[in-house]
Image 1 (tube, helix red, strand yellow):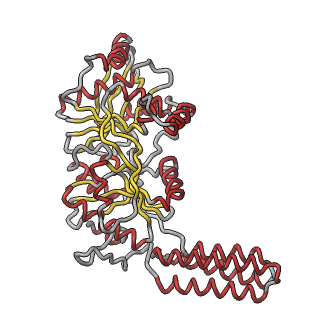
Image 2 (cartoon, helix red, strand yellow; image 1 turned 180 degrees about the vertical axis):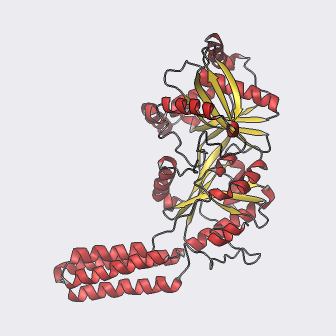
Image 3 (tube, helix red, strand yellow; image 1 turned 90 degrees about the vertical axis):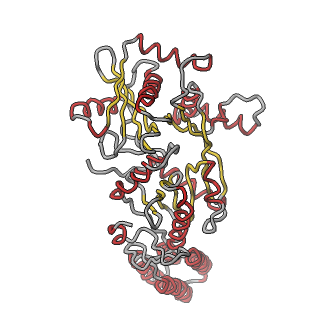
Length: 465
């Protein structure tokens, strides 16, 4: 562990071989059982105080509010949620205001403030992004092979848990009482069980529930058989699309559409070049930024969690490559951004950018030329994207009614989320790979859906440029 980690207290501290957590140094989510118990007593006392001075008409409202508040506090105590000084101060303020409202006969206001006191006291802590861990995380990414999501653990909005020897780790973000893991662990696979155990211990100390977004099929037992994790249901969400560089070819009937798309770009005079992002000149960066702005989605294009790196063109991340498509006049029309992993064995596409109105086939040309570049660079696998729910678009006549209904919904909403368009593009490469899952407790399904949508579509923090 780095000294900065110790100062912040955000990583689990293992006091012995059992993995017990020492959270005494935590400056942000300090465990204060006495304060929690005192808070519960204060809420109960406030309810009783208000009821003693309220009218009979308001008694039922106040009783219900007090019962709900006590339930909230009890639930938080059962989860082991820590309380910050700010939580305690806000809850105390709500209690004082409730007393005043009760004295003035404001039963509804009293009830609302009692509820607020319980909620504020048990408000779950968030994780804190740790972008300064980038060098350590990159070392783990560099040791991780055949994992298309591994590079995205470096994103600026992630927090981390490492093994005792720092040879393995995982990325996560906690929000709304749920700690969402980003993909699979990284680094030395022999230490993955230890990392999962440490993460589970950290979640217990914070009162967080675990969700895993983008777990590969081969790593499901890591979570489902861990003694520190229980009750997670594996729900398939799609497949990786990974091209084997050594065997890829444009020949054959199955590649006809892809071959034709690439040929159109050659006929149109499109050329491509591959450049490392960290070596962009100011002039080239400005030119590519213009492509992003002209794409029509630059402002919201970098939204995501488990499958997004972010900070495009910043040069903050090592082993990031751009392949640029230029028209006959030499003007940049589009570019794709790839992140490397496994010490140069794997590349993963993050986002494609293209001007509105750019010629058809440019994305296919960029993908094919990147695969060819990868072949000469010694790369073994190129991940082109993640295909969500490919079964919806497989056109299997034996699919059930529910799948057909889901397809109609996806087809209708393709203008917004473009699942079908993405599938049609990826199908040209004939490279569907390992299935990915979300691991989730069904009892937490609704709040987990809200948090996952918030992580995927909410504001992304960026590194300063």
